[in-house]
Length: 166
Image (tube, rainbow, N blue to C red; front, top):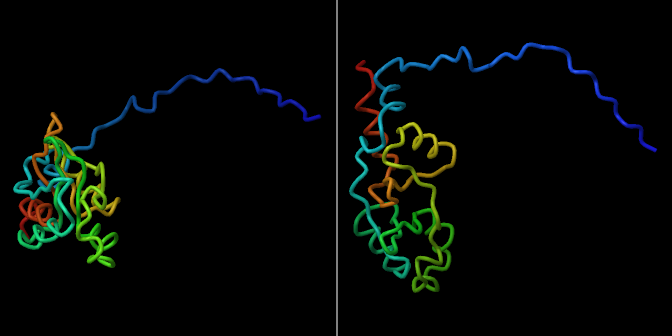
């Protein structure tokens, strides 16, 4: 038989609210202010390239090459349903390109991609790119309409505008 644990009596300890004296951090410079208080809409998020989920892999690859872009946002009925990136091409298609070039994008895209809102702070997008390994993140508005795309070049350009002069 397993002995029952005896509960220790709760001492009368005064409750202390850990957030009572919480001080909000204030940005130290223009870059920190832009990252934390700015919004993604302030970054150059357009133009962006799109495709339909019923496009073929070959059509998508030709479009990416012709537009010199690293990804296509996959839109159906004006809603984002996926993203087709260079990584998708390399990991899922390239080894068997001849056999797969007729496949529909919906079969090889990344469905339901991580998104950011145009009103989110830029720090959120940069954090997602850094911690999750995404190069491109779709930007949606409050109505779930695609309004842009954030990626490394656009992020770097935004950061450079706010770096302290040296």
